[in-house]
Length: 294
Image 1 (tube, rainbow, N blue to C red):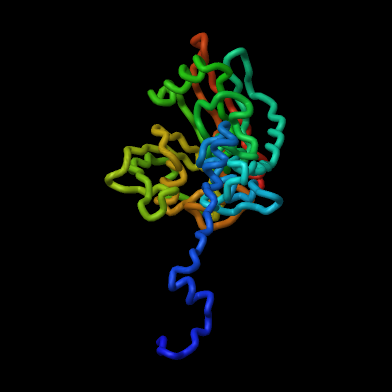
Image 2 (image 1 turned 180 degrees about the horizontal axis):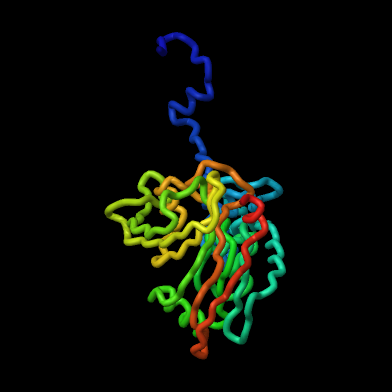
């Protein structure tokens, strides 16, 4: 509290209070979010991809890594925005895959386990099936086997329509835990996306119709080799159906509980009509690791 007659300890502040001195307000320079600056400087990428680049540590300013897309960048004295350095790793070289079949319109490959079907988002440093041709259908990253790609858009549409109209026939081989009670059966269980875990799927009465036929080809009691023929093509269909039966696919890190070097699911053959009207069946031999387990 100020008391009359007591000397003010800060005379300069007193003069400010009395209005004798005017405080100059410091001018705040204009600022902009890092991701918005990058959108202007790198229009070849969308904003979501650029945000992922920032989070991955690919963006820096004056040698300092920017870690947050909403980091505020101060404008230069001349009214321009600083140039943000974008240092994205080079894409890995796609593996050299020998085609199962190839002509002027299609290429058929034996996809190795671990190879992505398509990029996650707009950009990835990993090789994908799209490095070999136009994507027609997909296999999970950890699934190996027959996949067909198009060399032109007309062929891509022609092949995709066959998958949509269920005019293709696919056969998979899988090694599962245990042995199913029946040697042959039809699994008719609807599937929908899990609300608790949106990247996974579950059997549910409100799900989409999903049908799989299976046959036990070989078993030692601990593991069984199954032939699987899906009628529908739901995401994770085979994995979800077998999990529900109590016999998850060996190496399934999402729906199973036993770890292995890979997911033991292989697209054995694909029957489809190629441009020109010829009906063909393409086959990929069973990987060696399947016979090693049984």
